[in-house]
Image (tube, rainbow, N blue to C red):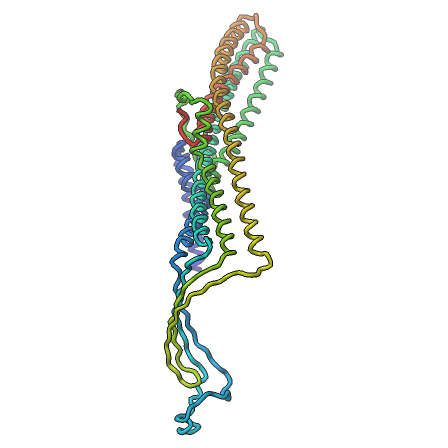
Length: 443
């Protein structure tokens, strides 16, 4: 009964919270807020952080291997056969059979320490490889974080572009509604034909369909944004996006070679791959060292208590060990060759990524330049579309124009308005993408 009551109260509180959220209205979500939410809520970023911490822990473990290790061993042994022949002495025999120590268990313990002296470079190789691998993991994480930030910005800006397009088509729908009403009134006076009305109504339906299609695109884009932010229950009515200032033009660009040089120096994924290549070389050295003699020193302090003759003793020992692999059926040799080939593989990957980065920088710079040029084109297109729309409206009002030309001019103007907003958003995305490509300022 109590459990059922608790569940009922919990459900009511959750429903009340949801109702309150709806009554409170959508929450304002700026681009900065979205970026901050992605950095803290994205499961991918959390996964990358956990992987990096694991590599750093491995590096710490390998770094301390030179210090050796101290082990404490202990236990209790028991013998189940009471008739075993036990070593006894004359004093025990003089006491009679009843005094013989037929103990069937004993305890033992020991402290053992071992430290490597010479390992053929395997310990230092593993240590350096782990250190570089951890550094590479940090670099890869930083690059992925930057990529996620760019994806958040692009998705956010794309949604703003869709909103601007929806607004433009809604403005056209209002204009068409007004035109339809105007034609209906003019029809009664015999000024317009029924064909004009039908053509205007067909255009109305096209605009409604376009607005619906854009709304579906917005729903899909918002779901992508929520996934990037780590929002499981986010929906398009929960947040209001804030339009951005698109009037600020980006700073002048560096020449192509300067951008490429900057990318080759700054790119965290390239530096991470270089560190992984170096780590593979150290790993190859460590594997090769396993074919050499291994020297270590150690010590032992032990004690045993009980047993067949009830002994109680402690003892210590110090030792030096030299191990030389003589025959392993080629296992170490094959492992060494494998490690060398992995090192070559990593080196070629570095060269391959350098080539791709050069291509990415050139492509990003070209996309940014095209975005700049496209804004100028769209501005001119919009000015012409507005003038054509104005003239066609005057011609139609005076009875000298055609309804098809007027509808076409209105649609062209709205498309040009939406295209200009899209072009300005594309310029911002292209600028951010170029900065991401070189991971720095393009000045």
